[in-house]
Amino acid sequence: MGMPSQDTMTESTLPKLNNPQIDSLSPDFVKPPTQDELLYDDGIPMETYRHKLQMDLLVDPLSYWLRDRNAFVGGNMFVYFSPHQLKNHDFRGPDMFAVLDVPKGERKCWVTWEEGKSPDVVVELLSSSTASRDKTEKKEIYQKRLRVPEYFWFDPFNPSDFAGFSMGSDGYEPIIPDAQNRLVSKQLGLALVQWSGVFGYADTVWCRWATLDGVLLPTEHELAQKAQQQAQEAQQQAQEAQQQAQEALQRAEGAELLLAQEQQRMEKLLAQLRAKGINPHEL
Image 1: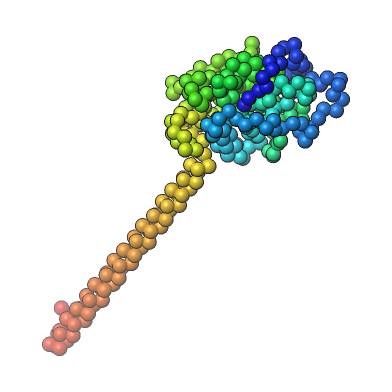
Image 2 (image 1 turned 90 degrees about the vertical axis):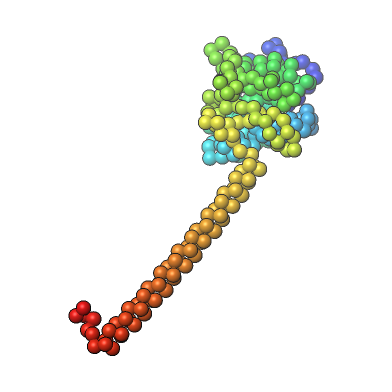
C-alpha cells in the first residue's frame, strides 16, 4: 500500500512506545479518537490491478481459514499506533495483516489503543514506487513502533523479491526459506508459498497461504469448484447405487422366476408319478 511522498517516518518524529503493543498518548490527546472519528480511506487505489488481486488472494482465503477463531484479517486498511498520525499522516497501513485473539467483527481501520494490540502478521506487496519504503521505513515501524511479530513482503511483478522476518531479541531476524522455498509463519501455523496459476484472468506467480502439509488455502472460486465436484461425485455415486439396486432387483426377479419354473417342473413330475400309481414318498 502506498505512502505519502514526504519522508516523515523517522525516530525523531515518531512517538516512543511505553507499551510494546500500544503507543503512548501525548497530553494533547486527552481523549484518543475512535475508529469512527479517524480517516480510514485516503482514496488512493492500489498500485496495479494485480496488486489488488494479490491482496485478495492473501486476505480472503485466510479470513475463511480463520472463520471459527477470534481473529481479524484486513487489507489495504489504515493501522493507527499513535494519535500523532492525525497530524502528519506519516503512515498508511499494510496491504495485508492478521490479528489473532481479538473479537470478530467489522472494522473501518485498526486502532491499537482501542483493540489493545497490534497485528501479529503483516504482508506488504512491493512495487517500484513503494519497495524502498516498505523495506526500510515501514519495516522500521513494524519492528519498533508496532512490534509486529512477523513481517513479509512480496513483489507481484518480481516474485524473486520474497522475504520474511520474525521478531527476535534484537529486532527482526530473517526467516530462512525451507526446502520447498516456503516462508513459515509460526504465528499462523501456515506457510507463504509461491504458486503458478491463473487468478483473476492473470496467469503468473502468486503468493499464497498454505498449510504446513502443503495444502493451499482455497479461494472462493476453488471452494465453489470443490463443492460442485463433490456434488457431481455424490450424484454419480447415487446413480451408481441406483443402478446397482436395479441390477440386484433384476437378479432377484430372475432368481424368483427360476424358482417358480423349478417348482412348476417338480409339480409336473410329481403329477406324472402319481398318475403311474407311484408314491413319491416311497421312492
